[in-house]
Length: 403
Image (tube, rainbow, N blue to C red):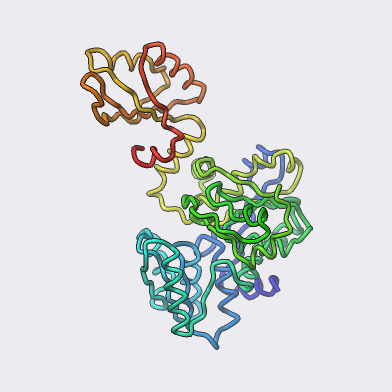
């Protein structure tokens, strides 16, 4: 059925390219291919599931409803315009204007966007209530058999473009639609790695409990995969996988790949789209000499996030640290501190926060260096000068307020 769905898609949009990446292939001594879903018309794979689910109920159904603040909304909007049907898309009030604009651009006059609630859950309830009242067709972003079948078209194209089944596939997991579709199509024909963000390990939790469970609250940084509860239908297809094939990646670590792919390869990836590539290092011993496909699931990246992404990447790599210094209020104290810095230690932030006592002031300092080994030596020099400080680099709670 996935093959038929893929054939039906071709008049609507072309197959996304499967490209061998020379940089990654050399690094991991393997043939590493990227399935470039970031090059689809809506810069993600989501339009596949939307297309397949909608084509099966048209023309009997002409009203489609969904709740989404991202790629699913854009995929549904694109398909509403293509099929000439009405779509009502519910989004949180807090959705960035860029995502609203792109959804409206893809859907044109065929869609209506309703902003409801501060969080996705409120938008979802509103969408489902409206859909029931109006007799529309609700389009789930992942927990729908027709959506799963549509996402499986990624696997169909991989086999067609590669001329066979790869040895190893690495793919991101959020609600499970993409991974369930690909896993169902290739079955035991290859080895898999399923990648989740550390802040939203819904698949790992479901496998541990034997059923989908809510892992709220989730870290929403990897917005394309930050799902609190994997779908019931998707988990039914994935429940037999080996838990050891699941890889959890720290959100800051994922930023490292986003920056490298942008600077070196000129590829723009969203956090979820970079996860499979970053996970290569976790399976380096398994993939030597193998044919490996990484699913670059999306490239809807808001460049206003780039400073944050760079910051996270540097912190993960150990190239940037933040600390609060207790600076004596005496002549020459600042000069004494500056003398502790090495030739490649650069101050990127210096901010008096408050005077905690008459003779001392609290200063927030950010230091960037070229190799992480510089920091132990720098802190040793600071200690030798008798300064008091607190390293807050990895204190996420405090960092949210002061960094």
